[in-house]
Image (cartoon, rainbow, N blue to C red; front, side):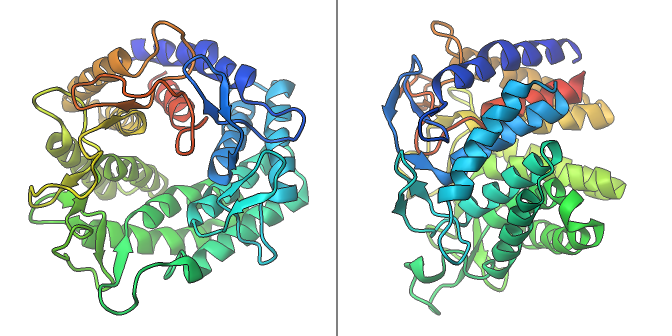
Length: 383
């Protein structure tokens, strides 16, 4: 498996990062353009907070873990200065999107703007230790914890009391975010947050009888037979398992690591398309037609997060099953998402048969994050 380390390293440093360095920087207004077509041309100038923050995190992390290139730090600061100036409302909540100049477009309904802003400024503080960066990260994390029970707050469209659901995404993100901010939060707070989340994921969202992870459960932890309650998102569940593996390694908890590994394989085996290859985006717990019309698409981040989970599993215990699956998913991802003609960033969206359905390299939901983070994680894990 060591032979893959150089492949992923070279792709990261020779293709992916140069693409974002060349095409995404808004030198005039600050921040980054993320809506880039197949050749890297900007097709929309709106700026989405969580993608801005993710790019800050990428370039801060490259500076910290790969090489102390001043150009990388400057790119991180370009985004941070823009977000610090424009990104929050008067209550400290992060907007969802801004126009090119930084004027708010969409209210702060999406807590993941806050999650990635906290992650960005926490990591930036590591390479540029200005106290106000640490304060932004800590304050934002505190706001996230206050909003856990009702993340959308007054922007929540759900009628209260009839079908109260918990969603898997926020606990999943908090597993990783807590570790990312441990240097600012302290070990005790990280333990308090993550212990309760691990229990929630392993004992409630994970459905023991089926071996599947539900995307939504009742507020009392039960299965709800509805579109939302039957929803499976294999990629989310697999990504969460490598976060939990990291927590298990930190806690020196072999049982937890092995449980995360077991759950990861169950999601992968259930989610793999046995006809065309690749991992389904959404599935229905009972095999009914999913609500999402894009349910059978194959998405970039799902496959890349799966490769990270498999690499971490193999590095931990040399499980031959992890090696076989890594090679299988690697072959699919590199043959379908990678742009052989233009190079640079990967495509994001395929139909069920594995054909590219949009040549965008970035947009409202795809930015400088999943591809470079996965390449970096796999390189460092397998080296």
